[in-house]
Length: 84
Image (tube, rainbow, N blue to C red):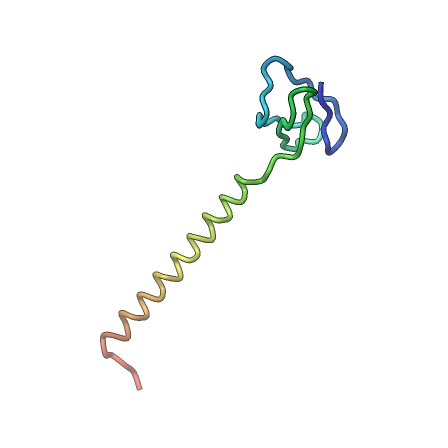
């Protein structure tokens, strides 16, 4: 048994199969947790790496879109079709 650091709920974790780094979710509050110690079993908040990766992917997509827009503007400038 371990307790959730968010809501103090008791979480049943198999002592024999638990490894440091295993991820679990609190059944009461839904907090994502990670096993930080196995003797005794302790839980800590899981990092939000997945969410950060998704944000990074979105940021990269935004930069790609901006790069595409810049290339289109450069193409227009090379045509010499300037409206005065």
